[in-house]
Every structure is written in C-alpha cells, then in structure tokens.
Amino acid sequence: MTERAQFVTRLGAIAATVGSAVGLGNIWGFPCSAGSNGGGAFLLIYLGCVFLVGIPVILCEFVIGRGTHKNVSGALKQLAPGTKLHWFSYVGICASIMILSFYSVICGWVVEYLIQAISGNLSSQSSDEYEKMFGAFVSNPWRSSLWTLLFLLINFLVLRRGIKKGIEKVANLLMPILFVILIVFCVNALTLDTAKDGLSFLFHPDFSKLTPKVAISAMGQAFFSLSIGLSCILTYASYFRDSDPLFRNATIVALLDTLVALLAGIMIFPVAISFIQGTGDKDSFELVFVTLPNLFNGLPGGGFVWSVLFFLLLFFASLTSTISMSEISISFFQEEHGMSRTKATGVNTIVCMVFGVLCAQSFGVLSDFTIFGKTIFGFFIFLSNDVLLPLGGVFFAWFVGWFIDKKFVDNQLTNFGTSEVSVWRKPLMFCIRYIAPMVIVVIFLYGLGLFDAIL
Image (cartoon, rainbow, N blue to C red; front, side, top):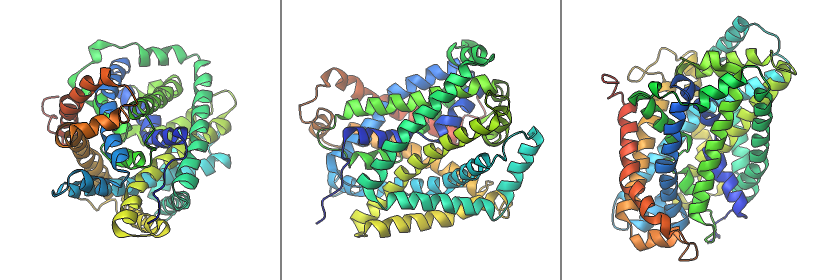
C-alpha cells in the first residue's frame, strides 16, 4: 500500500489551508457585503462570528481529518463504524463539484481580464465601454466557456502533481505574493484623498445601521469566507503531520483569512466607496469587472499597472481556492475507488468542465433555462452555498461535539497531551455544541428566504 502523502512543513500546511479559505469571497465579496450592510457595524459581527463559529468549526474538521488521515468518507467510516453517517460525505463532495463548476466560470472571467489588462485593453476606456465589454464577453457562448475550461486545465496541472509537488508548492509560492500585492494596493489606497472616508466607514461602527439583516449577513459572510462545512479543510487536515498543533493552526488560518478580508476592504473602500455603499452582492460582478477597472485609471501610475495587479491578485486567490475544493473529490476517488492520482484528478476535472460550461452558458444561450426560477449558474450557487454548506457545518459541529468519543477529540486538540489547550477546551466545546450550530441554522434559514417577510 502506498504511503499517504503529508505536507512537508507546518508552514506549507498553513499556507495551503489559508489558500483554501482565501478566495474571491474575501477580496470582493467582503467589501461588497460590508459596503451594503453598514461598514463598521457589519465588521464587528463578522469578527465575532469568526471567533465563535469559524475557529470552532475549523477545529471540528481538523480533528476529523488529522485524527484519521483519510478522505471525508473514509474518516466518517472510521469514526462512526456500523452507521450510515459516511453517506454524509457526499454532501461535501457534491457541494465542492457544484462550487467548482460555477466558481471556475468566474475564475475564467478573471483570466480573460488579466490577459486584457496585460494587453493594455483595460486602460483609458469609459464606464459605458467597460460595461459593454463585460456584457459582450459573458454572453459570448464560446469565449466564457473557453476560459472556464482553460482555468480548470490549469487546476488539473497543479493537482496531478500531488500534495508536496503540487498543492504545497503552489501555496508556498502564491500566498506570500498575494499578501504583497494586497499590501501594495493598501499603501496606495491610504495615499488617496478619500482614504479617511473609506477607513472611517469600515472601522467606525454606526450602530444605527445594525439590524437583524445586517447581523445575519455578517455571520453568513464569515461562515462562507472560511470555507467551513465543505470538507476541504478536513481533507487538507488529513495531510497534516501528527505534531502539527491544531488549535494554533486553526487560529492562524482564521486570522489570516480575516486579515485578507480587512486588507481587501482597505484596498477597495477608498477607491470605490461611493459605488459600494447602498449596493448589494448582486452588483459585485459590476464592481470587479466594470467599476474598478474604470476607477484604476484615476490612480497614480494609471490603469494599466493597477488592473494587472488586481486581476493577478484575483487569479492567485482563485487558484488556491479551487485546488483545495478539487482535493475533496480527488482524495475520495483515490482512496475509496482505488484510482491513480492522475485518473482521479482527470475525472474531477472532466465533471467540472461539463457543469462549468453549462454554468457559463447561463449568461448566454441558456439564460432562459431555469431550475426553480434560477439559471443553472444561480441554482448551483443556491444549492451549494445556501443549502449544502450550512448542512455540512452543522453536521461537523454535531459530529465532533456530541457523537465521537470525547477522549479522541481531546487527544487531537492537545496532540495527545503535548499541547496545552485546557484553558480553551470548555469554551471551545460550548461553541462547537451550541453556538456554532445555532448560528449556522440561522444562516441556513436566512439563505432559504424564510426571514424575508420579517427582516
């Protein structure tokens, strides 16, 4: 039997796990959500949710993954023998494939715009020209699909190289560059005349804007930003070394993920605060592909430099996220069905390519085809983000908090007594058992629209 791969270093494990959490949701999802929900008041709830829900549920996935060193299905079979609980692994597997399918469409747009930026085609155009350019591109039945397939091919080339030579190597290279680009953008934003207004909006809470809807939106953004409930964190944890401290790693991952969101806010609010305030997430595509390229033309250095850096930033964030989501299915195919690494990666890629093209066509020839009133693209977002991910989050919290042996959980949290976390154990278990499931259920019901009539 082939020895199971592990991350070579703790730094590599953290870089890969942070990369799995950091994605487009941090860099433009957070600013859009914060902008449309009151800024500073939204941020306070967001931070509270990171600590009360994010870190505890990350730890749940860490405990299951590192404790078994198996894919999600194999882990549940080992920890819940004689039950059918391993069938729940298909929630994460199906969610990862659906997210990869629609997410890769957006990532394909990022690749197209990165090439357009490098070619100088995003410089010195009018707002109307940017809008027409984006509309023509996404509705084109061939171009959008082509870039979706190209992005998934890049994903395949990284993943087929495995954990050490593929995922860890790419994470170690891209994550530092991602932070450097973010910091460059932030330094530039802080020199603008609008910097004070942008920072004030983000960091000075106006509690008059704190409504139940704002609070739930902030909780949802924190939950989805960390990619919890999907099993990708569990899968990456299965490649951790037994000496890696889980509590410390979970805290670092959550804090770095949150730092990226905050840096994105500092980067974007001074530049585009007038656009973001009062808009909703539905306008986020317009912000990224129309508004920001237009606003970059007015920055020192001109639109060429900032557009290239911005879409390079998005590309790196996209790639680190998608390789982690892919690993859920790949590890499952390898370990449960005996496939080689290359074959498992190929099967995952082909399935996502088929669904990805269908999602891409939701803006073109399939725009009138709907499922429960949603396009294929919209239905995949709804089913994965609003249904499957919350179910996964509640399941993992219940499984670790109530089902599996307490001694097993303690051994993992303390690395068999070598890491002291006794001070945090009771608060952690309280969050895992009560607070996290309650918050996630609220997010779930909100995503289903059950609060629309009262909020």
